[in-house]
Image (cartoon, rainbow, N blue to C red; front, side, top):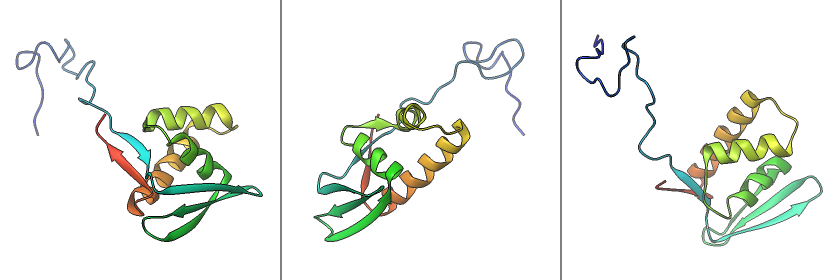
Length: 115
């Protein structure tokens, strides 16, 4: 196993040998597909994907996330928006947003764009 040392990269590793202040080069952003049409309907939403000729139903929270994705957003921005709008624990907001985003990416409802 590789053990990082301060001698190898003094600008990244502190005296403890732990990686400090490291962040990914760019965090990806996400945006809903331009062919989507959203309609709120009694506590949920209907999503029509014109290009794929498919429709989906989503929860009220899912609809809010898709509304937010009209503009490019990072994962962190989506989680923060969910926390601001709903009384939910941060862990729940993170896991819910990740699961929803993964389903949307797999269905071509949301696209990943470079950060």
